[in-house]
Amino acid sequence: MGKPTKMKRGLKNRHLQMIALGGAIGTGLFYGSTSTIALAGPAVMLAYLLGGIVIFFIMRMLGEMAVDEPVSGSFSYYATKYWGKFPGFLSGWNYWFNYVLVSMAELTAVGIYMQFWYPDLPQWIAALICLVVITAINLINVTIYGEFEFWMALIKIAAIVLMIVLGLYLLLSGPQSFPDNFSNIWVNGGFLPNGWWGLALATAVVMFSFGGIELIGITAGEAEEPEKSIPRAINQVIWRILLFYVGTMAVLMALWPWNKVGAEASPFVQIFSHVGVPAAAHILNFVVLTAAVSVYNSAIYSNSRMLYGLASKDEAPEFLAQLSGRGVPVKGIFVSSGITLICVALNYFFPGKVFMYLMSIATIAATISWMTITITHLKFRRHCQAQGKAAKFRSPFYPAINYVCIAFLVGVWYFMLQIPDMALAVYLLPVWLLALWLGYLYREKKHIA
Image 1 (spheres, helix red, strand yellow):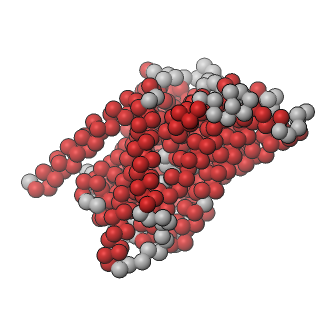
Image 2: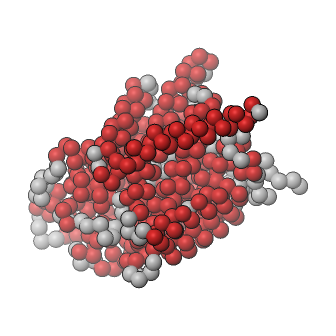
């Protein structure tokens, strides 16, 4: 029996639901929320709500295309088909680059979280161990990846729900009665302590938290019954955002004054330590560690699939299109995992400084992916109208919402320019687009030759 030429549909509906859930909960929420709280104060919950609504509409656009044609490689394939060769090349390589950065940020976070228990453990050692273990899991088959991600996501979700319940119990059973028990939300400089400007800056930063939520589109090529499972997973995005981001931030901001949340650990761990629940702090640290490992696991998965999709279209080296006997793109996994070794080196040479820079560059790369999905969807819908074809899973408010999303993403770039730690990433944007254009020209020249 020869080697398979197609991915195996080994992801069941429960895997898909948890991958979609897990994609929405990572280091951006657990650790990155420190910087957003500093910018917006209690209004951080509004920042997550605004960003989350935009992401939900973009996910509906991707979902419409994924249900119409469920393929591995997802929006890179759609961009090529409905927009053109260069947009497809750009979106595929940009997404891969984005998730390399996300995986580096998650590895960095693993090192930070391990120091909660082992203060003398160098960040790079924890990052390296995580890299080796997760790479091994991804090499087996897609069902093992799905199973591992299912349980990791389940831990994150159960912990967030329990954390909200515990937080509400502490707020409602304390000596103060309503509304004084929730007064931290408005007493320390008000709900908007840094004004609307602070909220706008925080909204730009929170977008990192949503990076990876579009993974549901990448799984389309390996999902069983994509016409049922993808719409179900995408429609739940808005409720997850309301519960996991807005609900969690509301409880945290009520429990502890926003201006006393520091950057030395996850704000979740810090707050529960301060309110006298030391066991909860240890449990939460385990959960935030699980979240970082889970997102790194998803990053290795999606990167290898995107490389496979690019190689299948002859936009990446041919060897990356080869599958193992179990239908796994092994070489793509090794390349994607190997490149994240750079992060291990960065944490060795610059411990403590890496996370914010990685987060800002990953945010820029994510906005390019979302922008590509939004514009490709406009072209996809025009194509469907010209063919007289009705969509199976229609995105609402077309085309007005597409233009609203594009304007919002341009606004994110503008506000990132106003934040010193993030401005460099915006200045690198044209350099990155130029590098992709040159790569595309080289590929085209090679084909002509």
